[in-house]
Image (cartoon, rainbow over the protein chains, first blue to last red):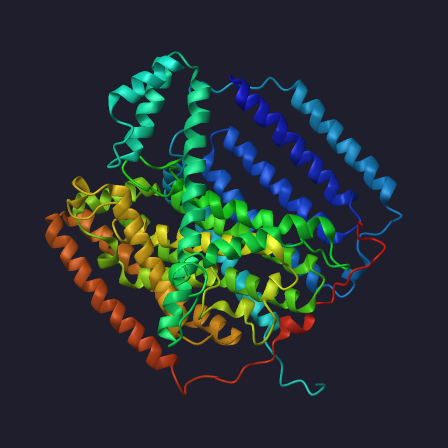
Length: 169
Length: 424
């Protein structure tokens, strides 16, 4: 972070990310909190851009905004009790306490650690390097992950495969 | 500033229409040499690019609204718009003024914030796609090294915003249209990704400038090497821009106008414009990826490259108009089955074949012309054979042609507005 532009971008994105993350749990309307969640994802993607990790940033948009958020959406829309929206729960104050504790630990670690400053002007062409690493050094985890996804797909198809015709309608 | 301006006007570059990129470059160089700080040059260049693309987009939209209506009318043996101005040329202008002046109505039950936000959220990413398209040799606003991924990612942003538009209207038709759009977009996004893998494997770069440069260097368009790929991409593009025969999201005869049923005035104008711009963006991506971009076998040295690019772009867009005037609309289960049972296996096999070909090409290192013509022949024969075989296997009279029970559409709409929680 050597220029003012990156500094400004970082603070704007950080406020946007954290602000909408808070909104996700605070907002009553469940679709509004869905929108806030998308805004959080977008903010994280922007933070990756300021770190010149363009491949990860684009992937964040593609996977999280384009796919994961749609999964959330389907979960919301297909949940029978979704019209109750976000309601008051008796776990409100324990959750607040837990969040405060976790963030206190994170802030303490971030301030206490002796961070290494990377030299140079960041990476260029991260996509190529990631591709080479995935198919060379980390090929086993890569293949295992793809097998896991295949199992998940087959499992979900088996779970929802239609039973003999329904008579009720 | 004055010095820079006079030096720039005297240089004789500014009217050089052959290369707008050079003109902009000359302005920027002059500014830099006149002692402006780097960031101002950066801001000015991005402003020039953004304003230029926006102006071009709006003008092209106005022109193509007229062209599309006239052409479709011609195909359907009608006259089309012919009253406002000579041959109806001023009709789009009149329509635009009407849209701007109409009262911006928000229905009572609608979610006010999201109802306003959705048209804007849908418009911005559509415009952002043009940033990575190479209009000419030096005319890319931002030649990202992940340009192809950027195209896909930006297309993916549309999905939640369409849902927001449909949901915030608080209308069953709008909600159904939105859910149809989401189902379509998710399915065809996969086809799009697999179709774009072909060019990326050949070029081994995701930068759109590199892909155009590769086609220029080997003097071959990727459509020759990737006939199956461009087929899939054109179909996926039609789905993404909601153009017939894939326009079930706004099927007028079933659900009034889909996700923008409740929208009127300029808010509807945003959706309309965004749809057109998305069409141009898809056409531009097809031109850059498969049709050689701004190159035309040496003619780019005589004709301004951006004119070649725009000419190709409009020709590809014309194909979409043509299909809209010709083909009937598909049913939603047909559309889904087409994506998952027909296009997806073909695209997967296509990626496998392309990977094998490039591997063999790199291992044996034959002369480039020989290798490319063999690959082109293999891919063409293979593509035709695959499509024929699959169509025979899954075509008419085969498989389940009866629409199944649409599980999703029955369940959708469960989420109602609770008036107390909706912000007024």
